[in-house]
Length: 78
Image (cartoon, rainbow, N blue to C red):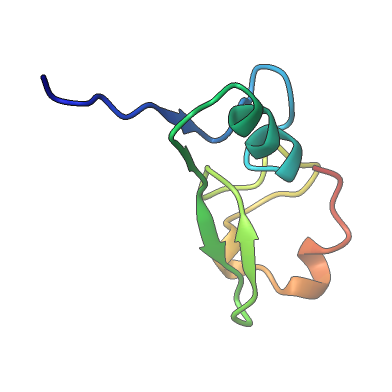
C-alpha cells in the first residue's frame, strides 16, 4: 500500500494567521507530514511569507508585494 503524505496548506490558517510560525506549529502538533508555506520577494530582495501576490486580503497595505520595499512592508499589520 502506498503511503499518503498530508500537507497543511498555508499552515493551519483556520486557527492561526496563514503562513505564520503559529500556523505551521499547529500543523506539526496535529502530526502533518509537511507544511506548505508561500514565500515572496520584496522589491529590494527581502523574503516574506504571503500567499497572495497582493497585500490587501491579509494586511493593511495595498499593491503587489514585489513592488513594495521592505521598509514599507515591515510597517504593515498582517
